[in-house]
Length: 247
Image (tube, rainbow, N blue to C red; front, top):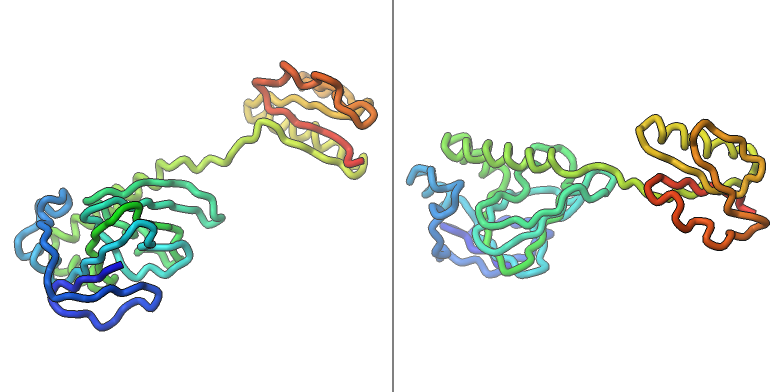
């Protein structure tokens, strides 16, 4: 990661970040070609150029990592960054490729929790970044930049809210009993699935199974063995509960 300071060298750095060789020379890139900056006033653009750090990332280098403190907001100028958002249980809920013109880490700035975002360059990428205090100061002083940040936050929140957060629904669920006391569990689970408009069926080794409404049951384990082709062509369109004793 190489860092270029737009006006003067900043003497403070995040201890977890690799520093390149700072330079007083501003990389040549017209921010106005980016959609979010196209409507900003010359005064605001100049302020952004003066406050921003220009940071280059090579493929595989991490901008923001899970459980890390977010100290900077990044705007991607060139290249591509892969962003993976996790929920608090560590389940991946959104995976996206960030392209030039988007901000990275904006939503997380408003959270008191540690980052649930992993952002990693997938090709040589150039960004500008701001510390949180500098970003807030710019937004407070320049109303047009403040509106840009609000719009970016709304768009990011919309993507987050429309992400598929449904839990996986395995087509086959195994229930292993260590005593007869837990045998009723299979029936209760099947009835609960049916109340959720699913179509459960049960395959097991209980030769004393009592019919439970219209929930199909098939005896497929006999004396510790599975009958040949017992599962073939059965329960293809249903949630299958496999109900067996541990021994």
